[in-house]
Structures are given as C-alpha cells and as structure tokens.
Length: 341
Ligand SMILES: O=C(O)CCC(=O)C(=O)O
Image (cartoon, rainbow, N blue to C red):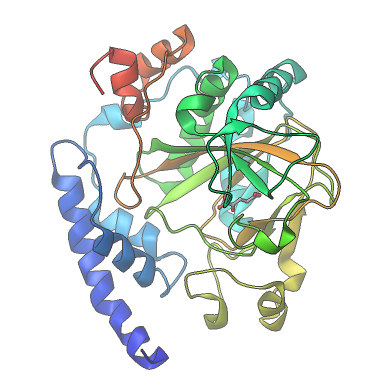
C-alpha cells in the first residue's frame, strides 16, 4: 500500500480506536483481551503524533470512583523517595524520563540479582524451553524471566507494587492508573545481530494508550554494559520520518537531526528511572559484561496488548498494599483474594 493511502487510513483507524477503547472501558470489568484488529488500529493511529494515545485516553477513560485514585502508604516505599515526586513529574514532562536521586539499597538489589541467577529464563529467539541463565557463557542477547516467576521473589513483589511509582504515574498521566505489566531480563554481549528482537534498535512502545514505565538496574551499568538509551523530548515531538511504528536505525535518528538528544542512562545497581517509552528508546547492546533490569508499567487502561493475571503467593506487604490500592493492583486480585485463576 502506498504511503499516501496509509497516511489517510490512520484517521479512520483513530476513530475506530476511540470507539473500541470506549466500549472496552464501559464494560463492568476489563475484557479478557482486546481484538487483534483493535490493537493494530491503535498502533497505526499512533503514527499521527506521539501524544495521541494520551489524548485518546483522556477522552474515553473516565473513572469517577475516588477509589481508583487511592495509593498505599507512600512512606513505606524503600524504592522511591516520596520527596522526589514533584521533580520527577516535572522532569518526565520536559525530557520524557527521570533518573531518581535515591539509589535502592544493596540488600534489595543483591536479593533480586541472586534470584535472577537461579530463576528459569527464556533465551529470546532460541526456541528452547526456560532454563537457568548461563551467566558465564550466554548464547543469545536477551534472557526474559516471566512475571509469575519473578513474583516468587519478595523484593520483586515490593518493587512492582510500589505506591510512589503509582502516584507519579497518576500525576504525570493525569488519570488513575493500574500496574499492567512486569518485565525482567538479562541483556548480554551475544548476538548483536539480533538487536531488533532484543529491543536494541530505537522504537516506541505502543502496547497501551497512556502509560509510564519504571526501570531498576540490578547490575552496574556503564556505556559498555548496556545502558537504556532515550531520545530526549521524543515523547512530545517526533519528526515525520521517525513517526511510523517499528524499529529505527541510529542513522535514521542522525538523519532526523536528533542525535544531540540521545541520552545513555548509566548508573550503579539500584538506579531507578521513570521513562515515558512512547518516546524513542532502546537498550544498547553490551560489549562487556551483562545487564539485569526489572521494569514495571502503569497505564490508564488494560485496552491494548494481552495482559496477565499471574498466580503467585503474595507477601504480607503486597496484601496490605492491595487492601489500600485495589484498583492499582487489580491484576493481582485473584492472587491476593485466592480466587480460581
Ligand atoms: O533494554 C532496554 O533498556 C530497553 C528495552 C525495551 O525497550 C523493551 O523491552 O521494549
């Protein structure tokens, strides 16, 4: 199909996205999934402008019940300092990301890394069953640990249910949010040619309409050990040449005159960052050593990509947080309330 026809089609796709998201959110409880065509329409409509998903979300997602805004005890967070909330929100608005001043205590990062060293992980693109990450001799560039597996670690449960992150996402997006996704993965020096598969080429995340991610490094990250890379300001403005869905080469970013905005985020284990990944970002392929990262996402709706309701044994802390912010942690309702999956 010609580029001109594709461009015109984005408008009816936008209209269909508004209608589909409205009907998804009108349901008494979130539908189990979003039709594939509706997911495609949303991704395609997002070519129009990086701010489009947030606009659609504000038009169609209305939660009038105050309970949707409730967050658990903010002072109990060992991950994010509540005093950084305002600065974080202002900086994400301006740049698209914020690196927190507070670095998480080593006892927490050591526990999560030790867990990841013995947990089953999936070698991306290899087609092999999950197995313990072969840290001394990795075979592929990325090893993913599934959410239900990660949730066996109490410190991971603590990270992904953090109330200060929920508050920052609410303030930034201007709407109630729920925690909709967890990712946990090693990146290695191997198979740099799989950069596309391993999210190591610039791209936008378009899985939901309006969302914010939080990352924590569990290994020290330097320029050669795989920093997260973000194009400052690209959450708000993108030249037409970079607006299409899919991966973008460094050359395309240079040609668009944006290389000066490319920021590599380095930091010791325990560094936490909030990133609006509707902006262009990627992981840099490590050339020395590996990187372990954990990430969670807060979004205004489960409309979009398929989501999980993982089965796991919640800690006392997660049970308390669920009681205080059931809307934010609604994906964990079955696990906490002990219902059948
Ligand atoms: O590894 C990173 O820093 C980025 C990962 C990413 O963009 C993704 O998984 O979509």
